[in-house]
Every structure is written in structure tokens, then in C-alpha cells.
Image (cartoon, rainbow, N blue to C red; front, side, top):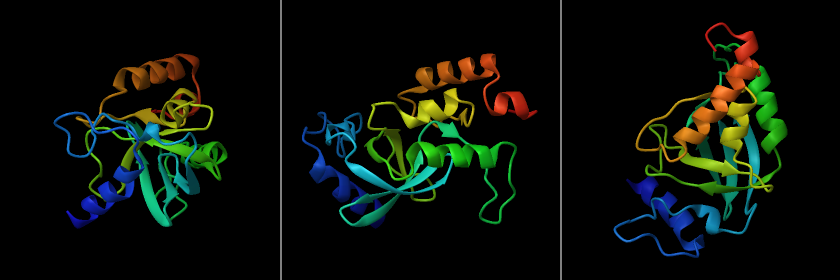
Length: 171
């Protein structure tokens, strides 16, 4: 609870718009009201997790709605196309400035902030990773605002044989 309150306090003051009626933390009110590219990415962990800097604090962000294969860089078992997904995510987001959009839930069970991550050119990194075949769609309601958009990107990637869809048997 204390960490959740800290995350809410970290992000709430920066929003220019008031949260929707009936909302304590602004669910449905994206952090896209911050200036574009307002948070620097300080590191890319793998294909679906990054670290951003917010007011001097390192915040771990888990991209909502996607699951990238494990990279194996940290001693775990590497999965098919994991290293490629991690390298692509680094090329896409390392040293970038991003804007975050939150959904209904703020934190996952590992206390990472859950977000849709937007690049300076307004592309959603979550969708880019799926469409290029570096991640699959994994939806955990109630965080499903862009489920249809992500599933359409996955269908297109699968049809094109993009990334893991042409290499991995279970992908």
C-alpha cells in the first residue's frame, strides 16, 4: 500500500487534467497529458520491461498487454527469440524519452508500474513490439484498454511471419 501511494504521488502532480469523476487515481486519464517525451528511459531490461527516471526516482515499468520472450541475460532460461526481442526493445527505447499511459491497475504483483509506453513520434512501443514479432499479446483484465489494437497487430505479425512467428514453434 505504501509503495502504491508513493507511485500515485509520483505521477499525480504532473497531470494537468483532473481525474475523471469517481476515480481516485485517474484511471482512464492517461499520463499523456505530460509533455511528449517527458520521461527519460534509463535502461531497457528486456522486451517488455524498462526503467524510467521520474523526479530523480528510478521507476520500473512493465509494458501492458504484451509478453516478450525471456532474454536469459540475467541467469534465467532464454526463450526462443528472447535475445532478439531484448535487443530490438533496446534499439527502440534505450536513451529515448517516453510518455506513459496507465490503465485500470497501477502495479503488477512484482510492484512494477504498468503502462502503455509512447515514443516521441507517438507510436505505442507495446504495439510496435507486437507488430514486429518481438512480443505476443497477453491481456490481464481490467488492463485491456487497447486489447483490440494489440490483437490486430499480433494478427498482422503472425500473417506476415514477422519475428518470432517465423522462428519459434510455439510463437
